Image (cartoon, rainbow, N blue to C red; front, side):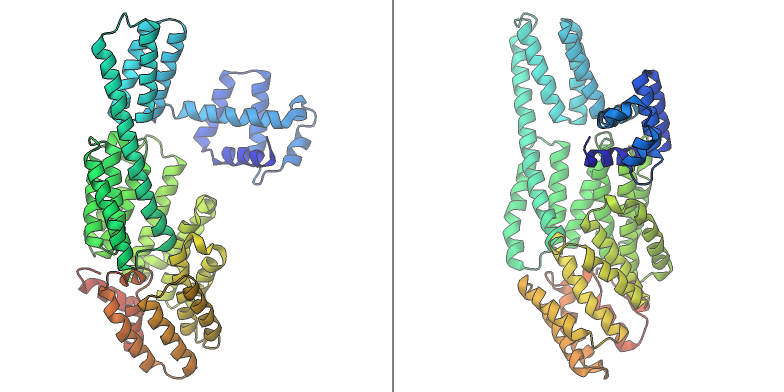
Length: 518
């Protein structure tokens, strides 16, 4: 294997749980040969390394013949580990079970045991229909057509040929519909992750016909699980991106109910359910539906029980991402520092394990939550540290809206630290960024003017400037296309805290308790 592949082998072995490692060794010993024993020696050595070191391996096995062809040995070991994992998880996936039946059918076909092949393929077909595995179903249909041909159609009826053709056409239609729905859903999510929520009324109107078209497309898709899920998911994403949280909540709740009535199907892909619950929890928090929010949060944490016999690493990762990021967001909204600050410390520690697996967008979200909670706690140096981490380590194009907010927050932190001498330079940088990205929004305009005034005032009292800024942005709180900025940080609550000389956490807690909808 190449150096990169060698690193992949080390990464794969180090990712195994103790149970998976034990199973691999039993699996390898069942096929015990000299080469298999070499696998175990090489496996143990690589497993012992914190960082992959090929020179150390060459030295350790210098008297073993296999080391002369180490790249071949590593390649075989890599695939041996994958085979053991395939066997270990064989009963956990409907798709894997269907695949085995298809393979059994192929073996029986090659042995000219056509009647047995037909029975096996019919079993696989029933499972594929039950779990809506359309790709596997196409493979089964193709084999059933070949079976009919090899027997010169003597065992089949014309009606059965028609049924195969009709089923194949239905499956292709479902796949085409799901492909279109997935593409349009992904377009909305891509823009949401990279550009942020829609802050332009014209763009929101431009998106709506496509969403309505997809709703109609889903209705005509003969009600497959995937198309219904994608329809609700796309609607909820559109409404969220335009700041329409009540309608986003309705679509998300409908999707959660859809998932819960199809647990057999999503057992193979629990990440779908996790994604829906995560978004639903966040929207519930934005709408102050805290009882529902906590109920859904409990469901997320208990997901392995109804969905999976084994908690695999992917499921662990998703639960970590979603439960931690959601709870951090909720603590920020409520100003809950009693839970929020310890949770930041816990999450930072857990990130040591998961950071290599996280996308830039996810990392940026965590850094933002850390910075925000430290800011709310008045720990401005820590807030600055994590805000700088976001600005210095995350590419602008990966999460443009979040990057823009972090530049704004950078100025706000320096304001709180009394670093008015730093503000002019940072202000120029922010102005250039906003101009380059054509972010000519009302909030950004008001914030720039406020900071320019602060810069002119130097160390003097800023009460008048703060009052003016507060009055200008207060009206934006109910503006569908301007309020998105308050999802990152409640600037209005910050103004109220500064003007009333109250802790920001107290103002946030009071605000949440008094409002029905944020």
